[in-house]
Length: 54
Image (cartoon, rainbow, N blue to C red):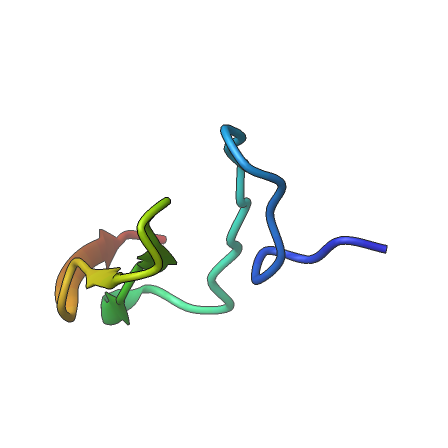
């Protein structure tokens, strides 16, 4: 089975998160891939902050 880490070419995925408590959460994502010429590409780490209220 595929996970959020394994994707088919030219595809996308939807993720759903739940937070257990109110607070400020920061998650960091980095997307990597391989171009058709074989070279690697990366977004670099990107932080997103979520403020969750009760």
